[in-house]
Length: 65
Image 1 (cartoon, rainbow, N blue to C red):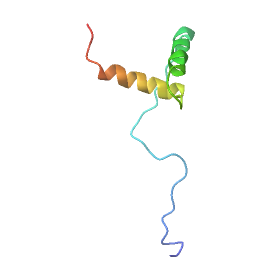
Image 2 (cartoon, rainbow, N blue to C red):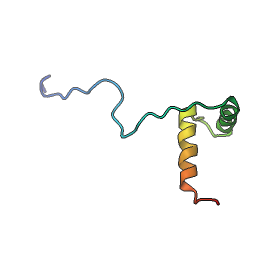
Image 3 (cartoon, rainbow, N blue to C red):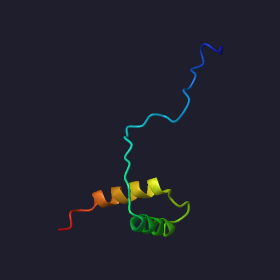
């Protein structure tokens, strides 16, 4: 196999179908988020992953009105 035949991969993270969401949170909410993270099994999620999991779970629940 020559170098020309080998498909060179691109640098960096692979593309995903997503958008960046930035949100400012009060310290009390971040403290509650960190407490939720501590209750999770190993490996513990990062803050962004924790937010994704909580939002996904909240959107999966039927409306509680």
